[in-house]
Image (tube, rainbow, N blue to C red; front, side, top):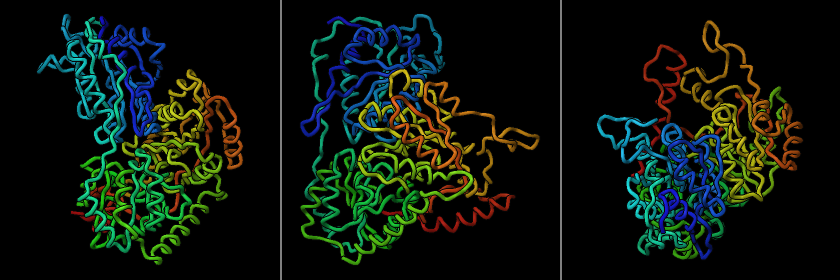
Length: 616
C-alpha cells in the first residue's frame, strides 16, 4: 500500500486497540494539533484525508493539548489517550512541559512534533537550532529526558519498528508516559510501499502481573505480625480497578486506609476504614496513625516526598514496609518487602495468604475516633466563617456540596491541591482528579477538557487560582469551539497564595508572590486592574461574579443547568487556610541571612529535619 509517512502514521494509530479483562477499546481517541510549516503538509494532510476515521481537535496552546491528552488518559485508567502534533520550533518545545507532566504521572500520551529536513537540502531552515556540533540535533532532542521512548524517523523504513515500540511503551502500566516520534517535514510527505499488515487491527493487552508466591509469603508474614498496620493507597489502586478488593481487604482485616493525591477516592470518604489523606497535605487522623504504624502496606504508590512528609512521617522505630506495585522501582522503595504485581491481583493474593488476620479492636476504635475528630474540623472549616472575604475551604465546601456523587473535581497547582487533599470528600474512584506529580500551573482547564471528553456524562468542576488561570486560560476557547461544558471556579486572591505561604515559612516574607503594581519601593502598590471574569467571557464562557457564599451556591446550581462552560469568579482571603496536617515538608532555608525572619525560619528547619529518617 503506497502512502506517505504521515498517512501511514494516522492509518496505524486508527487501528490500535487496548484490552483488559476482556474489554476492548480504541486506544487513540483522535489527535490534537496546531499546524505549522513542519507538519501541515504531512500529518496535517493525513488527518484531513482520514478525518472520518480519526478525529482532529484544534487546540489553542501546545502545552495545553498534551495536558488534555493526559487528563483523558488518567480518566480512562491509561487504557486510551490522544496523539498530539505540532510543527518544529516553538510549537514543539511548548509540548515539553506537557511531556514531563505525562511521564512523571505515568500517563500515556503520543507526541508527533515535526522536525527539520532529514535530507538537509537548504540548511539552516526556518526554526532550525543549527547546532554546530551535529547537524542531526534539533529542538526535539529536548524531549529525550522527559519521554519514555523517543525516536526520529529519518527514513520511511524506520517507521514500523518505531510505531510498534511506541505502542509497547504506551500500553505498559509500569513503563508508560510520554512517547515522542520526531517526524522530519520532508519525510512526513515522502511516499513508501507499506506492508498491509502494518494497518491491520491490533489489540494490545494490558497485563495484570501476578505476585510471586515467595514474595506473597514474605509479605503476609510481615503483616500477620503487625499490631498497628496502615495501608497507603496510591493511584495504582484506581488504575487497576482494585477499589472493590481494597474495600473487602480493609473491612475484613480492619486495617485503616490512608490515601495519596492520586489514590484519593480509593475508598469513599465516609467508609469506616478510610482515614483520609496522608502526608504533608494529609489529615491529622492519617498522619497520627502513620506516625505509630509498625507496618505500612503501600499499594500502587510511588511514595513521593509529600506522601512520606519528606521521610519524616513513619516514625515507629521498627516500622517495616510491604509494597505492592506493578513497577519494580516503586516496589523496592523504603527498603520494603517487594511484591511486584498488579494492585488488584496483589491484594487478592495477600488477602488469601493472610487468612483470618485482623487488627486489635482497640486499634479500630482509635482510627475511628481520630477520623471523627478530623471530620469535625472539616465541617467547621468548610462552613461559613463570616469573614469579609470567603476562605478557600468555604469555596471547596460549597463545590463539594453542589457536586454529585459521580462528578469530578479537577485541580493541579497552588494552595488548592493541598486543601482539596485534606478537605474534599470523594465518593467515587474517578471523582477526584488532582495533578500533583508535576503540580503544573495551567493544567486545570486543559486537563478538565480531557476529563470531560472521557466522561461526558459527569459534571466536571475545575478549581483554579488566578495565578494558574493566567498561565493557560485560552483553552476556554477550545471548550467553546468543541461545545464542551466545564464548571470553572476561579479563585481570585491576587497572586501566588501557596508560594506566598511557603515564602513566609522560610523567612522570605512573601516576597515576589503578590500581584501588585510597581511603586518606587518595588511591587508593593495596589492590586492590578485585571478583570479575569471579563477575560473568561471574551474566550467564550459564561462569566459569573460571586461575592458571598450564597452567591457562589446559586452560581454553582445555575452552572449545572447550563449548556456551556461557566466561569465563576470569586475573591478569597489568601491568608485563611485549612486545618494543619501536623506533617513536615522539606524546603531548605538559607543557612546564613541578615533577616531575622530567615534566621528564625532556619532554626525551625534545623529542628524539623531531625525527624527525617532513612528507611533502609
